[in-house]
Amino acid sequence: TIPDVLTESETEELQLIFDRFVSGDIKVPGRDFCDMSQSFGTPYDEWQLVNCMLPTRYYPPMKGNIYERLTASMARQLYPESYMVKDYDQLLNKRPGKSEAVFSYHQDMGYWPSSEVLGVNLTDTCTFSLALDDSDEANGCLRYVAGSGVSKTLRPHVPLKGSREEGHALCIEIDETKENVNLVPAKRGSI
Image (cartoon, rainbow, N blue to C red; front, side, top):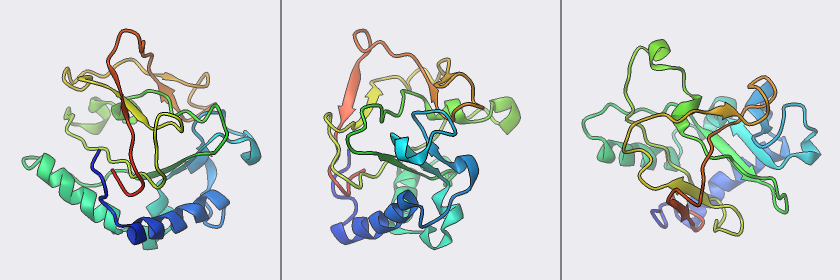
C-alpha cells in the first residue's frame, strides 16, 4: 500500500465522478455496467458489486486525471525497461451492507486474450487500485496470495456464474488455509 498518493481534494474530485456512474447519471451501455458478483440481468437494486468498465471511454473528461498521470509514472519507475501504457480502467463499488459484494480471487491476465491472440507472451503488467473509501478486512479490502506472481504462471480460471455469457467475473480457487493470503487495507486516497 502506498499511502496518501492523492490529496483529499483530488480524491473527492474522482469520487464525485464515480458517484455519477454508480447513480446512473453517466450512462454506460450493455455489459460494461454490471454486477461483478452476480449474473447479467440482475435488477440494479439487487446488485452487490457495481462494476463500470472503461469509465474514461464513457466520460472522456476523466481521461488524463491525476490518478492516471501518477500511476503511469509509477509504472515507468517499476518497469523502466518496458513500454507500459494504460490498457484498461474500471470502477468498482462494493455496496454497503451487501454480504455477497465479493470480487473473486483472480489473476488479471485471466481476463486477457491468450498470448497467441495478442501476438506476444509478456507478463509485465501493473495494476493499481485507488481507495476512494477507507478499506479494511471488515469492508472487503484487497487480498493477494504472496509470491503468486513469481512463477509467471496463469492459474486455471472459471466463470463465476456458469459461463461468461451469464456473468462477467472469472475466479480461481484459493485454499486460504494452505496459501499465504495477505490483506491490503488502504486509507482513502491511497493505492
